[in-house]
Length: 532
Ligand code: NOJ
Image (cartoon, rainbow, N blue to C red; front, side):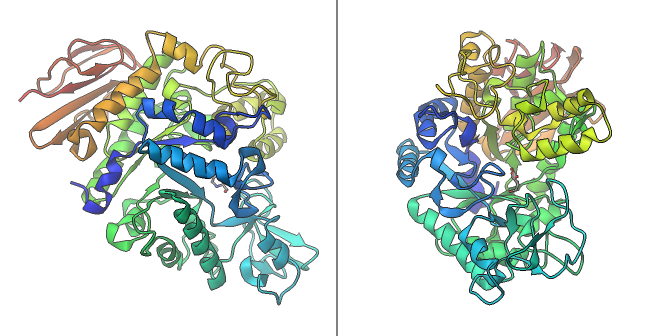
């Protein structure tokens, strides 16, 4: 049984909304907060009870909102603070929660703090950022080039771990910590229920060790934010690239009052050799990594985050399974193998209809700063076709295409010109088609979430793996008191699966199975109660 502090979170099912691409209500081609409000009943119907909203603060949008120029106001394209208030009210009225994206590591250089800071070395904002006369190291920015940029006004270099217009905040300055506490309090007072914290491991740097993350004061800073009277009840999930369970424990153990959970990314390597290069064997790897983290988090009483994709990570279905002929089976099988594990489910928008990665024949169809910069780098050593193939495989835009609500000209997303081309398969794969089909991914997910919500075995029950590493399937049990359930997910080949126990007729399956044992089609899955 998970510790009391976190147990309630096991019943949260979080849907990640990328507001820019979710639903546009004013025809400017950009999704907005009223669009999110419009779809709350849809989300409720799916079985979701919380949303994580990617950044919606004022921003020049060089990195789609992760470059914030005002932490307390809403981006013009997304609406107003009143829209945000209405969204919070709409969610709470439906007994749903709101998790905001909090970006503490950097601000936009358009932020007032940076504009003041660059004016000189002796104003109240001078030390809000990292300034040096010369680059103190050779750190690289995540979007290419040096992480140090010369600012002629100040006559010094500042650090930017991402785009040139995303300056890293200097958390070693207590005034910055205080500013950030105030930002958190501002949103908590507006009724926000939690935060996803962007690259939280980077807010403390270790210049001596040449590391721009996991610095010596990291825990102190996180605790300063979330270990307070009004913040310790919040749900907090850190984007934090921990290497092992001990590191996770140092951030998430309940008594530390830091983070409720974090996204660990080990399974992001499944199905790829690097960000832009595919690799076979992803399903087995995914299973083994999930099993490992189920076990280590259970041993340490930690809350695990169940996700396979987000606005940075292309859909898992296109990396490890079949997004062609067996797309329905693959999407539903992946859902069963992930969301019936122990932890907090995160569903990325479109995942509930089995949206795969799209494909384009020109770099002009991409908008993401990382994809565009990477394409230019790749082109230096390969042909246009080769470079595009890589971008089509690994681009962050793969999960940033407008939500395909229907197969119409604008996909039901907007009446205007979408800010980014629609998904290349939107005519074929969209919510309307999915719901009209007998093989609906949405309805499968809905049934799966319902089963999970009403069942202690799937919420807080123990996990036990049944399949072996050499098997091409994943079978596990979840057990609570005398109630035991089995989940069987076949991989990419037809095979006979025989379980070491007897099960009842499957409660849920993606191909209408009538018994747990027997021949499974590729990506067929079944969820059954185990007979005593
Ligand atoms: C991680 C976010 O998820 C990503 O989209 C962003 O570009 C970087 N952090 C920088 O904020």
